[in-house]
Structure formats: C-alpha cells, structure tokens
Amino acid sequence: MGAFYMLGSTLTKKRILAMGGSKTVAAIAGGVMGGVAQAVVMTPAGMIFTSLNVNRGKKGYENDNAVIAARRIIAEKGVMGMFVGSIPMCLRQATNWASRSGITEIARTNLKMSEYGVWGEIGSGIIGGVGSCWNTPIETVRVLMQRDISMGRQPQTIGQYMGSVKEEHGIPGLFRGVTPRAIQAVWQTVFMVVVPNILGI
Image (cartoon, rainbow, N blue to C red; front, side, top):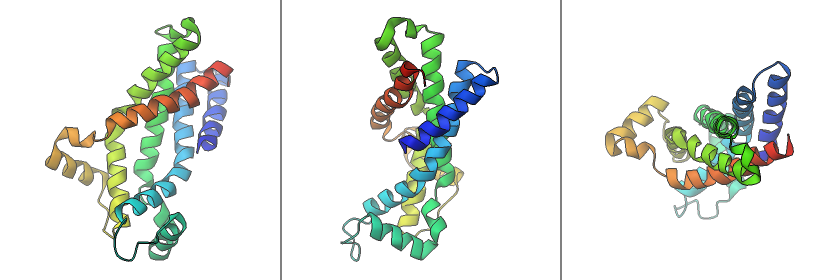
C-alpha cells in the first residue's frame, strides 16, 4: 500500500512542480493521486478485514481466513464484490493524503516549521496527520458499507449511511474512532510525508 502511495504521490508532485506549481499545490495533488492509487489495494483488503470481523464466531465461518473470505465474496458477488465501498475508500484516501500532505506543507512553509530542523519537520507532520482526521465520517461510511456487504445486506448510499448514523448517534457518531485514527495518521504522515520531504523526494 505504501509503494502504491509513494509512486502516485512522487510522480504527481514532480509533474506539478515541473509545470510551475507551488510546493503546497504539488503536495495536495500528490496526496490525492497517491491516495487514489492506494485505494486500489486498500478496498479489497478492507473488504476482507471487515468480513473477518463481522462474521467472527458465527456458525459456518469458524475456519475463515483471508483467502477463504476472499473466495466467498468473489463466489457470491464476483470479482467486483471485492471493490464494494471503493467510492468512499477513494474519497477517504484522496482526502486523507491530500490533507496530510497539504497541511504538512503549509506548516513547513507558512508556519516556517522547516526552519527548526528535523523536529520542526516532525511537528509539521503531526499537525498534518491530526488535521487530516476531519474526514472520519467518510471512513465511518466505508466501514458500514463493507459491513453490510459482508453480512449479505444490500448496501445503502453514502448519504443514507450518514443520515442513519446522525439520526441514531448525532454528529459525534460520524466521528467514532477519531482518536485512534489521529494516532495512526500522525505516524503515517511522519513516515510517508515528512521523511520523503527530508530526503527531498
């Protein structure tokens, strides 16, 4: 997944800079393309992961593993069944990495954090990682959509899922799990955005 992101991001950033775009624009565009490229791998991986979780302990699923879950999904829904939830996954990944890269670059340049060396670079990545979690509602929808498919239910639209969660749990329900997401976003941003920045990639 990291390789898909780095390839899409690096090639896009270099192209934008060669066209005369700013570092911030290049960072945002690179994040979008890298995130979408990563979603190609993450959507089926998320489908398998969700299937294993929602069916754990159920009769007939006792011996499930990643291969068995994938085969069952393909047998029931075809190969494209592995890509159910691809729209929210692409939206999540594109906005994730665009935000992580863009906010990090703004912190580096506009807030001049790059002037403080490695610790300033890491600090900009922390800001970028935490700031990217505004899109948690998209991840909530992705989980619910893939959960329903894994349980044999008809998936709803993005708007229907958001409306249902908001009605039942209020707006905070759309941000369930935001704290662990923020922790994950910080280390991923430092590793995938800050380190390449330091290395000049």
